[in-house]
Length: 557
Image (cartoon, rainbow, N blue to C red; front, side, top):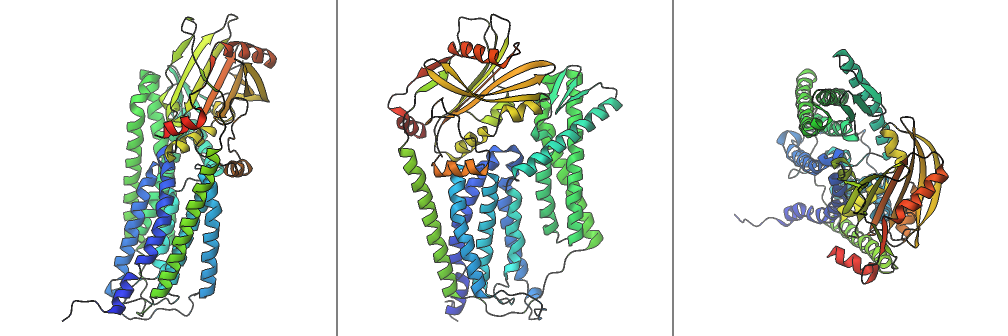
């Protein structure tokens, strides 16, 4: 008997090769760009596990579909099934491919934009499912060798959406709601245990100091990871629709309760041993509640499986569905379009980066001969959020007794995607967002002021806050290297500014962050005059040899 496979069987088995290669390119680039966000956003670190879980679900679908019970020739109820015409599938495939180009172009300049991340993922999922439908055929029948249909792949591919960062508006709403609920519940529980505590925004004041409830402790990290686990367990045990919904709701409840318990424990430790003792307990308690939440959810899924049963596997008849020419043609077009989009995007941004003009360099240097200046280490929480290359903070008092605090961060130009994500993420932070979360009240935003310093102009935004009954003046600015200190960076706060950044080819630029706060003077005009005087002794202009382009290439190397 010959061991050489028959041509028909060979063509059927290798019909998968062409679409897998083409679609694999789309998925590889998508995972690479989302991976930078998974590394930067702590609440999305679990995203690295999602591609492997998707692969497992895909493998399990193939194994289950090839079981004899599913391809035994028993006919299925196909009369009510909807089978779109091939022309419609080609039209939808073309639409997804065309939308992929502007999404990819915009995301290159905005690697933290949640909208393009979501659209990009939906487009790749759409391309994948439509291609598989065209390759497998319109029939709901299966082959005796593979036993597959497109519906077997819907959940494994759509499950990848749990790794996409939530839209900022939705996430901020959930985060702030969980923060307030978490802090309020913790303060009430502390009162029951006889521990005096006062709530100030998202911080809790106890006898030994103040404990901040940051976003990672608000429950959002556990909430998103719990949603992923609940969906995976529901598919793993093939639960029915209603038990899956109950499992998701139960996961949300468990995530919130475990986070309240964690906050209660950390606050109790701060009250008994001091605020500094919280640092050594922060991460271990975080890992503990994730493990405890997962085990509780897993046991709940097993109980629901025994209680309600599982969804039956569909039984369909066998029949040929593969078409080698169709598989090759669709895959070749997708691969060619992928290369055109990637090459065009790279060409556009490299073209604009070569035309960057040199701007005067500057930095912050502390006067070493003045003992009033106290240079302090930046807290680990701030370092983790900003991920700068150089940074420092300082506190001092001027001759009039006014108290000052200054933060200065520097990011060098780099072609690393993760560094670009860190640079863009820093643009999302600002006094108008961060200080109210610390319990301060924004009284007024006075717009952009220009401060003459060391022969150059420094543009800064001015805010006035109320900090426990005292007036706090905050001056803030982010500056991209190509535009210098006189122009504030495009912070990409809305769709129009993000589109403008892409059209300007803004991708790999370095930047500086400067924030100065003063307490002691009441009038904003007086604060501006004092700021100009203080910055004169701190800011020093400098020019790197060879200009900006030399710095870009030197940093990249």
